[in-house]
Image (cartoon, rainbow over all chains, first blue to last red; front, side):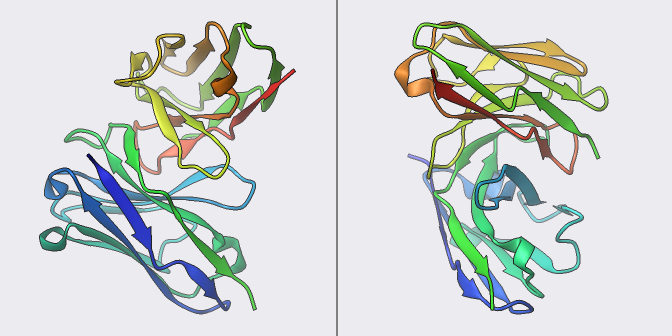
Length: 121
Length: 107
């Protein structure tokens, strides 16, 4: 069974940092493009970042570029999101999600349960 | 960036009704259009991928159609478990973008 389990969320002050993790199991993690998608309270879904199966490509949303860094450790079946210079508008539930298939055109077929990041003084 | 415009933003319907949601892309995305269902406090779940393909295990009352820039999502006969928020998403190119969502409520 495919499982994605996020951790690392919490309350952080503006300008602070946080590192999110996503532990994957039930599939060959090293074969898939992985992503972070966020959802601000009461709002819609916003894609944040993608990383290729062997980290050969990385993409970011303009809203987080320069402040957020995605990485992965295929030996540990883990995905990470390093978040720096956090702002109130980064407050959201952050989901780890897998893209199906071997291209960038697949759907987000599996999602974690999400971890809440709250940026507030 | 590709803008996804979804309508309506909310919809009130009864069990047994047929409902339709539309999603328009700001440019041609071929058939790289996916539909998700999200219930409160839960992660989204993919229902339809690549415009019209039903995800494994998803009931056949869900249907997707369209191509290019205009897409439709239909539930043929609403069931109680269908009341949720639905999102379209383009997977043609990054940044991947979602429609703003359609909240389907019980009439």
